[in-house]
Image (cartoon, rainbow, N blue to C red; front, side):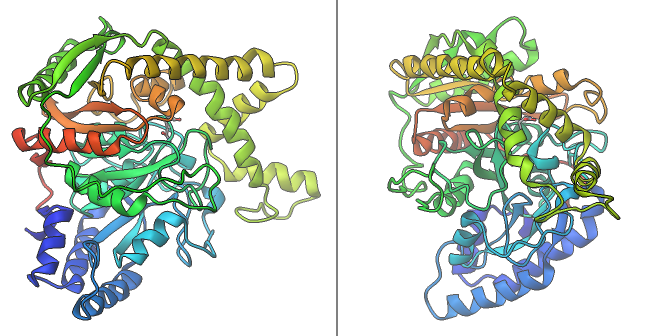
Length: 486
Ligand code: GLN
């Protein structure tokens, strides 16, 4: 079945003339039409535009200037601005927002002639770990009708797991690529902060947000990152540094690779089954020639509290632009300016977004700034130093991605703190600005789980290499949920 092929297989098939991009695109569009009512993974499907792009890609290939991506279909998380195509960020606030420009990430894919199938569902403004906060309805995990796909990039993850796209863009502020990857049996990488341009990627928490990939294999993530990573002078936090060909080093041996295992990630709080599975996965890396070393990240227990001051603080500033005046949702019949602001924001934002704005505004207010925001930034520095020390001894760090496999809808929704703890293993990476990756590493009760690999700054190639080598000797990444070939 064509939809079971990976991005790299589809790319080779197109190059060999086994099918055209129009055929491929039509196949995926039909699947979305027939099956996505089960998952709700797309907010907007851009069928007509996708077919036009596919035609153009076929013509470009015929003219002899195709790249590996020319004609390959994929999907964008609905947080990346796409010129002329509605971009909602999962919010009522942007229900009718049609960006007049492309995000740099979207422009990069266009330049390669890739075919965008549509925009995927997500937690509102990327706030959440279960995709239950989207204004456009929750997303179902293809592994079980009562299960969340993770969040906030749950639509991208569900679409790839259900074979409604071979890969999708995503973003990760505290875990939103790695956690849904783990819960849906996928591979995902959040690059180093500054590796992928944030221009046109709607901001949640600017010092933490980073674009990345959701695919089935590490090789496919390398292919996606080859397109996504670029220096962008229009994003002042984007780093001017050569982008390596991430596919070129996938086959390197792992002999001598030093892997650190943080004692804090394998504490008695970790579910024993999860502990066993992740340790088995790490043993596979050891068999491939890696050496293991226990390390300490002594401040990691402070990452969730620090994040839930810093991220809401930045979100409260970023989301102040949605005021009903310039763009976005505007309430009916405002009585005066105050009423316009008040009701547009009350009606346009959902509960979780409001909760974050309230927390963030409080943490930044004059009397509390020092006690909360400055303190959290100091803790952030300690967390970064823990990693700096660790990377003095090891090349990569391994552990679990999430505390448990996919959980049931509603099971954490009433308790925000419970939900926030979903990212206990992923958040420290964002606070330090490091790259992190999740690869399928086992099954618990028939549900996929992930192993997280964390790298030093700009060491994405090493993570992808380790992930790819792992996938040469394991088959967790080939497991598919049942019912997808219906
Ligand atoms: N789950 C975390 C949050 O709700 C992280 C979200 C993200 O990475 N965008 O903030």
